[in-house]
Length: 326
Image 1 (cartoon, rainbow, N blue to C red):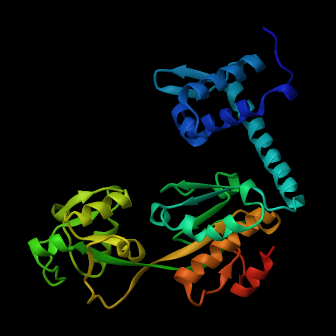
Image 2 (cartoon, helix red, strand yellow; image 1 turned 180 degrees about the vertical axis):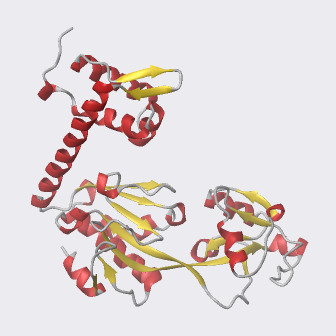
Image 3 (tube, one colour; image 1 turned 45 degrees about the vertical axis):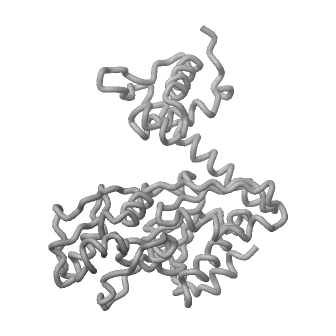
């Protein structure tokens, strides 16, 4: 067997190896890298062949690093950090606004982001500017380049990140006219006879009502799904009462607001977060600023102070905008 010199080893194979180590399985790495399972398995086999060593113990329970694999994993992680440093330096010297930007969002923003980014399509270089939207409930690691920009509901706790609170997303309780015709107008004073739609992994809507003193039992949850679109569709068909962002409910024919007597408005904070390269790389700055301005116009009003990282000093919104201006 002819072994490849270390400097000729394919970086894509090393990257796959790191993902398998981090995910703990071929399937997890395949999901992380958006590759087919057989491709990930082949990459591991090719890396072992090129290096002339076995990296994993293969058992019925799956893969586990052997001693050789552990030593290589440490070196591979250093390689990844150096590759990220190389990319950061290259980004800092680029002066154009073309390339790829990956934005991670929750499903609640799925319909909004293309609209909020619309100003970019009419700027010079639009044909060479590529936006990738990652709709995921998982909080991707921006510092490890899993995405470039994130729209989140909570302030990040990584001090290296650049973040800005750009507004709040109003939420409300909504129901269809067909539901009202059948069950009557829901009344917070008597929820026992009503049906609800909520999440599957978490009961966000019913728990919010519980915190305000209005009890909703599990038996009243007739539809549970983590898909916001499915929740909205179920509500429109009259399955029950649902908690939705106001902007989304208003786009759904036939939905009516209920529980208007709740004194306090319910809203989710909107944080725009980016990896540190946003301060040097013009494309990231352009996309970040476009999103920040669009979100603030739509949901912000007088936007509170922005923050560079959870541990950084607060600066004014105008100062932050100036710092990220192209």
